[in-house]
Length: 324
Image 1 (spheres, one colour):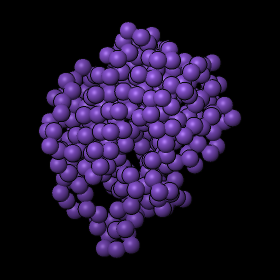
Image 2 (cartoon, helix red, strand yellow):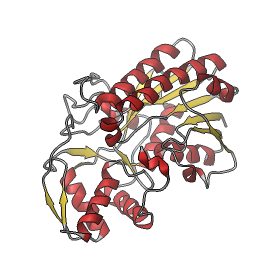
Image 3 (cartoon, helix red, strand yellow):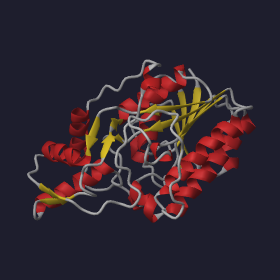
């Protein structure tokens, strides 16, 4: 068993990962400043989780807390597509300065393994779909605030691999693809669809899509993402990038219909304006992860049902962090 740390531990993926690591018997330091993360996500964590309030950009604080840690899982970021457009300065500040602070702190105290969360946003519109890890990383337009997140993740990968290649025994980055599940917040596709369908059901019965609904994504349930992160850590190679996700691709209109059906809602749809810079199709090639024995287990239909049930029981945003 290892002593590990997770930044962004009260975030969506971070909380699921923290609890999974603790349930596997590891001693876990759960680091978060709760700007977006919610303490309630860790309320039922096992006793071998120690929660620590810490800003990921604070190198000195990180060094203090990381003494004796074997593995750092760096997940802290300002996620959510709405935030990319509305708060790009904060997205970049946390993404870039956080990655620097984490890498430097890990080097300073002798952390053996650094695992950093990247994103499918690093390549935006891929040249081929399904997309493997060797696709070129692209920043299409520095004037579009959407790319604040993708740009920060490109820098995160560069920092992880190039600040730490000579000092840390195992360095890996993973690119999660369209993660979803219970308690993911309200700034993401499926929760926003739930909110739109709820409003439409109480109003004119019409849901406006972003674009014409033909855009596709391959959504992956959060438990499967966490299982992939742990498989990569335990069996993957150092100085490597891994796509973690599902290859069950779905059009957004079809997704909306599935969510409405799970909610028992009778609604119709109309096309709307697509956000600038949106990618028409995204689906990862997960052959590299399959080589480690990874395979997603939760089908989209089952995952949607679980997610809708949670949001039905938790209909309102919880906590001030929903401002972000």
